[in-house]
Length: 274
Length: 266
Image (cartoon, rainbow over all chains, first blue to last red; front, top):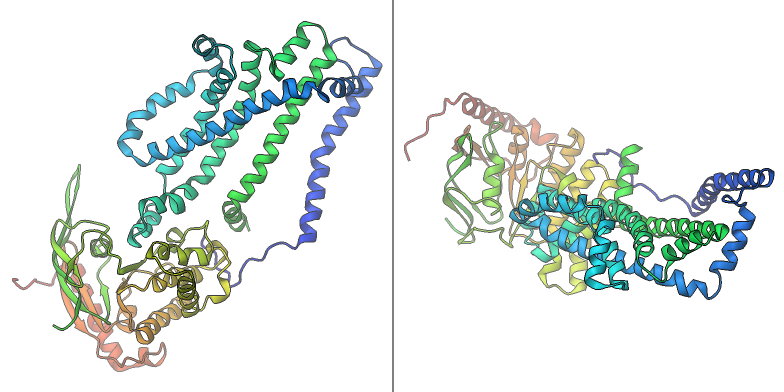
């Protein structure tokens, strides 16, 4: 952070930004495209029942998912996933901030939290089903019970590690507790919180699928298992493809949000590397 | 004494730890009038920062008291602003220069226009009006410390406390920043308590220099600096009187280090 330049760092011109986006897209799509071609050629040369070619799968994809099925299976899954993620983030950050700011509470809870974090959430599914039945709430609870831990523990750690000089600065200027939370503690912890959210997202997607595989009558996980059991192989693969696409979409949305929230953090890193 | 602003009386600070207690400050007493620029120097490790934290209400003294405007300081007072040595850790990197200067004003219940005027005025005073939209980490060390000074100026404190603010910047920048502090004191009549380990700096800046002993600390000397109020890096530092004063302070510091100074029975 100690950089002795007399000038102000300028932002990159727009034209170059677009060019770099184009280049990135080329790099990002190059390998998937190549893999598709190799796969297509391979499946044409030696067709196999369980590994249909890409064209067949894409055909199944269009037939299966585009249409009413989208509302029967995909929308409920996405709704559970979205609700699970929102709840995990809200509860994780709120509880993490409280626990991270109060020392005795942190010391009291941390070993217990580490224990709960270590429990694989799928084993909770039968228990939750017993308590709540086969409902959407069951699935959301399973998602939250897994996705919350990285967010919660990272928030605790980030809040705890607030810089002493920054805190003293805030105190000396008489900045109130609430303002300190809003303008100091949460922004300072935000790089760590975002790292936790990133982990939480992938856990949430996994748990969404698993919770639907166990006990459900709708949803992506349920539908993929159904295809599997009925030897609808191309359809099954198309479901897996859809899951992958949802994962990529989640990561992209996260990336956009992260770049906005942590632009200062990436800026510092860029200046330090320069 | 007329209009005493800051009164430190028999201040004592002992740090308790598992390995035993450390007496950082023995017994410090001094006072500061409104509009004064007082420098505090002392040998390294003499508890300068501890003293400042007690004055700023960030630490509770073991004994003795600090009074600002006749009111005892027990928590950070609203009429005091601090500039820390570590500008990189004192400015918030997620806020722009403007945002950093604005933050302490948020709870002051000012009209938006008035707040904006204070920010612009403070940034102009430190010569950074062009950098309001930049982030602190985009600026050089000296410029970052100017932002911290602007934040303190905009806060309109009765007393500005600076803790070795220029220890981490290069010599040329340091000279500029010293003149900036002199300018704030002269043009705006700000009361400034400036802690430094640099003897030349203390003599150049101060109207009074308080020399601290080594730990456990007491006030070894309270020296009036009888240089003209208009000071200049080249001519003032070349004055014979400047040399005399700095030599005197230097000798005092040497005595303090060796622990030769004997404290008069209080």
